[in-house]
Amino acid sequence: MKRVGSEAHALQAKYCYGVWLSHLKNSYQPSGWDEIPKSVAEVGPGEALGVGLAALISGVERYRTFDVVQLVEPGNHLPLVDQLVELFRNREPSPQPFPSNILTDRHLEGAMEPGRIAAIREAAAAIDDGKYGGEMLSYTVPWVTGGLGRDGEYDLVLSQAALMYEPNLEMIYAEISRVLRTGGCTSNQIDFSCAGATKDWDGHRLVSDSIWGLLTARRPYYVSRRSPAEHIRAMEEAGLKVLAVERTKRAPSCDRNALSPRFRDLSAEDRETSSALFAAVKN
Ligand SMILES: C[S@@+](CC[C@H](N)C(=O)[O-])C[C@H]1O[C@@H](n2cnc3c(N)ncnc32)[C@H](O)[C@@H]1O
Image (cartoon, rainbow, N blue to C red; front, side):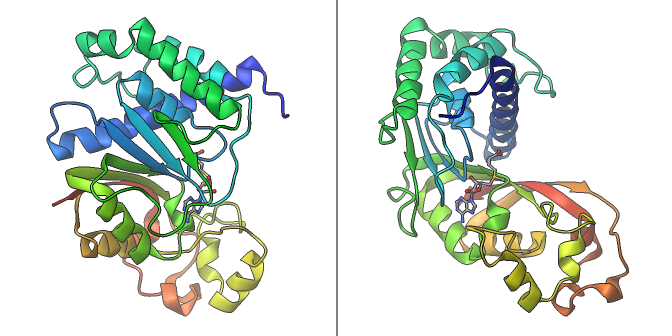
């Protein structure tokens, strides 16, 4: 079992807390909700289900996670609960100001009452024991098409730095649309950089499809190199109305003519987008 020190847990808790609050804010305002989502799914949670624990502490009732490979390790989760509770108690900035308009003092008093926190600790301990099928918090790996949940099951489906690895955008957004209730929201933070594969942040766009295939052949997943416009189109085609796109931009590192042919038609805005946070609602 890999040992993780308390400092590492504190960092991980702060990261997961910030990720949860950013998706909560990103989905709450555009959706016009007046209460926080009850049923939430996350695609690609990574090494720990900390975003889910933060969501549960803030009042979400059920949180389901789905990944393509098992990255979650035992022993990480119970210590995260205490760190996260502390962050919520202190209304810690994330670094954005705490969303007191959504998570009001009255709401958090109920969400963080001792009985609920004890139930969340139990759910975290179950994950640490390798029991992944809990009612409050679950982890499905590997997930397969059609396996993201029941039709209309969730108020919110989110992902953080995961959907850039999915080559089949039409499939994933159709699946997300299927499991969202009408009026439900999907909030996805997507990295459009090379994820460390090349020297320059956008160097992956210089590489031909055949070479890219060779470079990534042995990896369980790899950057699919789909553009922001392709993500937006796939969401809209799946019946997800895109309400907000918050882009982080960087200067392109090369001339447009140097790009591999399939990237030469990228819009100027997409070329500069190194990551983006999307909010879309199911009509
Ligand atoms: C860079 S990690 C990000 C993990 C975590 N969300 C975070 O912010 O630290 C990418 C995650 O996406 C998952 N992933 C990759 N392709 C996926 C897919 N097609 N469906 C679901 N998860 C996927 C990986 O297994 C991993 O958990």
